[in-house]
Length: 594
Image 1 (tube, rainbow, N blue to C red):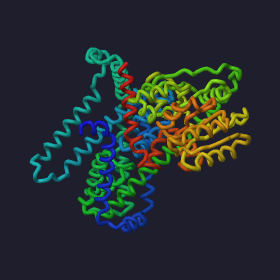
Image 2: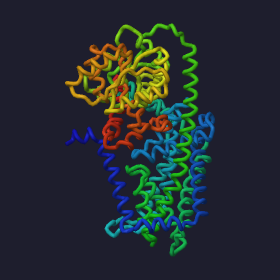
Image 3: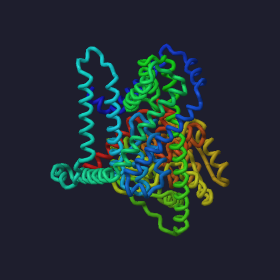
Image 4: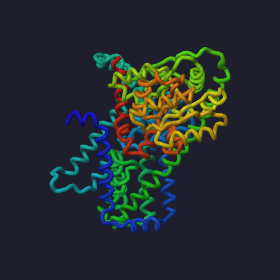
């Protein structure tokens, strides 16, 4: 049982989060007809809805300005609107993923602009510390008007004093904390050298962040105050939008503070994307304390969450698309320049490699890959080309035979964002993500010019034929001399190999799914006469329209796994919800075991 929990801890976490969300959703909508919520939304005062939206925008701008202040000189290197986009992209990640990884995500995106990601993470930690101070003040205030249950024999004033004492400690730590780098060297001397280096870099970055905070403390505290005041303003405007009335004027202030305190706790719970259910139940529960009907409370939660989410989704998604478009054009121009500068008569060599989880991954650009494959397709020596992503590397991690299959291939190209990050983390090497949809069509264009013949072995019955026809329509002159679906028995293999060889292709594309395609190719490669065999996974399923292609902006953000999980949750949950964290932990283990 213990071993099962260790191996499936991520799955258990997600199941727990989904259960929390669904339970809260059930409790929120219990005995409340949806028509009442719909009617209350349509009856909302749209002037105050607009004012809520303005307050939300002010809150976002205040958060962006505070981050720029905490970045110090680093913050001046990047325009305000780009910081805003990074912040919204981080918050968008927090909403779509049950574990709050958005702050790490925006630190990484900032790092891609040429900054120190450890320093960026330390500024985020200072942000959280400032928010903790503000949140503690709200908790202290809320304790003043909360009636404790009779079974709790603790005086309210004692809890207030305890919370106040904690706030004094946090303030003293923030203002007088000593993060001297040298004083920590002896304390961590027993740790491995790799971990020591990371800890020392972190301590230096934290010391720098606190120095910036002390230098700009007025701006930091004023913006933090503005952030929390606008958060209260959001709630107040929605009260007016839904015409929520309280028996006493002071009750509206109490409800605002109590809602803000409890919602901050609620959004940290692991739950389904967008914290749907948890958000609405908290609003219903708190407002019922002040005599507000349950249907109105749920409507309040729906409207408040909708308004606060709109800027995050719009700015985060739009910014991601714009960033992707600029990066795509830059990479395209760079690739074209590299191709123009490349000597067409250069010798075709086996590319350099980096080792990730026991598999040697080739260091290639798109132009390198296409040029090399075209050369190999006309060569006399038979070649095999495989791909590596987090899933395939996980499969090969404890499978010595599969590792040998990968390492005996002539090329293993990086097929996933996780492999690119792992290469950068482990070897400081920038790989190019070469998913098949990025390069196969360009390769086929050059193959048509070189009069090469292709054979497709992939997919369900009909997939290979439809994908081949799609390529022929796009690329005039392309020769696809045969196709075969990937659903066959062991007894059918001799006939399939004979069919391939009879077609006399230069290149065979193999898409049977991992690890079947890699094992099949290693077993029967010597019987195939084609000079080049390339593994392409489910590429032809996407090309034929049997699978939905991931949107380009999600692919750029490294969230293609999330798209595939949404499209096929039952087929992909284990690969991504368990496999991705497992891959990350194995990469960390490889890094620190050196």
